[in-house]
Length: 91
Figure 1 (cartoon, rainbow, N blue to C red):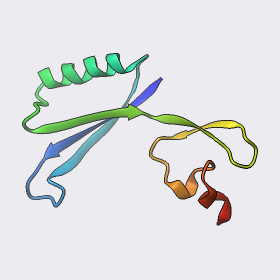
Figure 2: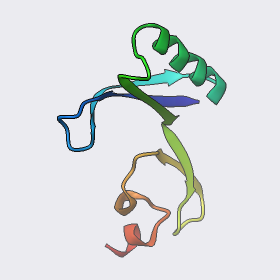
Figure 3: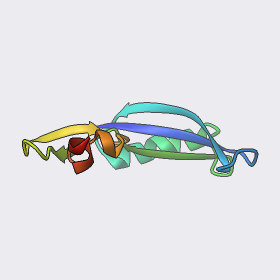
């Protein structure tokens, strides 16, 4: 399974209180392997007090409304581009 790992730096100057640093893709077999990867990054200088690290699967499986088939789309796909939503087919 492919995971996307995102790193944010805590920064009070930004409206959200953090700023996006970088995104990486990892090919790991499960969530535990990604948690070990995050712990390894914590030991290399990405401390909890300065950085926020999150990970999520890169793809998700959805059902196409028109055909009923299962397809894989990126996790961060907007709803208007998701074939499993009515909004996609009504535009």
